[in-house]
Amino acid sequence: MLNLAFIYIILIFLVLRFSVTLFNFLSNPKLGKYGRHFSNQVSVIITGTHDAEALINMLHALREQDYQHIEVIVSQPAQYKTNAAVKAICAADSRFQLRKKSSFHAEETTGDYILFLEPNVLVHNGLINSLIYRTKVFNLALLNIIPTQSVSGIVNYVLLPLSDFVLLNLIPLRLVRLFSSPVFSAGGSECMFFDAGIYKAYNWQQKVGREAPEAMEVVRAVKQEGYKVETLLGYKLISVPGTRRTNGLFLKTGQHLLETFGNNIFAAFLYLVLVVAGPLVMLLNYEYSLLILPVGLIFLSRIMISFLSGQNPVWNVLLHPLQMLFLMGSLITEIYTQLIRLIREKM
Image 1 (cartoon, helix red, strand yellow):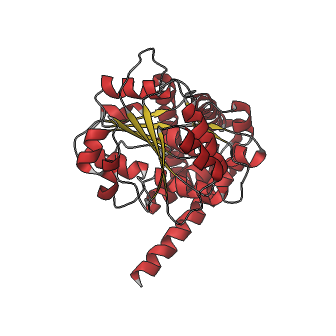
Image 2 (tube, rainbow, N blue to C red):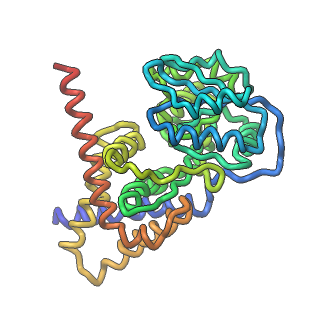
Image 3 (tube, one colour):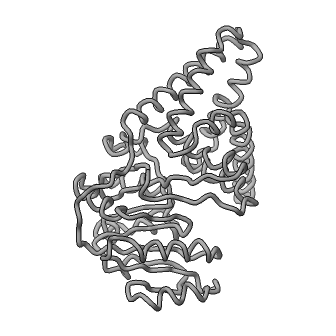
């Protein structure tokens, strides 16, 4: 009887997740490439890292952008050694500045808008014009863009699609803008586009207590002040190349997945029980002739999410069982790490 009740709960949750995925698929929450052109000054903020190659690729992409009204500030901690090529790029273009500081201050910017980019992303022509157009039309304080993952290699195929799977399976992205409640919050830190005046007035970095803005926390903070926020998929305007350094990808995936749940350990664990453990229980206790419903819903969900996120649907369907195992492993590892940290802080 208990098993039957659990199976019903799994089925209901599966139908709800499928409904969210279907809503996202039909509403198509992607940033479009608009024909309008603007001349507003945009301050692009990039936090320098030890990965000089990614930073150099980012700077080259910004130099080749069709939007020229930008100032690019590479904010690099003083203890980091600056790559010679990064210095050369900044010296060759007056719009580029290299600042060796411990943290970024919004008052240092001169743009009408502030665009935070992580150095591992690649921007493409049309991005900044489209960001400005969308922000102006819908009077947004923050436009958050989730880049398209460029997946290559078996490790990337197993781990990188997990973030999009969880996000598009749980959160109707169009409702982030349509509903002012912080409950409808989603986003990533790779690309965050702010109205500069509002950002400087509220200083979101200080408000959430971090030097670098964490997307979910900032989205909630902006909504709590009564401003509009929108989260969209980057489609063809911004992408993240698949990493060749896969050593830390497992742990990084777990961190990103837990952030999707707002760092709520209980919610993340409950999700694992319903999404990973649940189907295993069904497989062991369910009539095989009736498995066509859950298998069909999972299959269709993976297909729709793959098309939305620009990934290969065949690989995602074939690797789904393996991806779910790694989803469980990476998330449990991060939950364990967070619990140990909390215990040590209270001791």
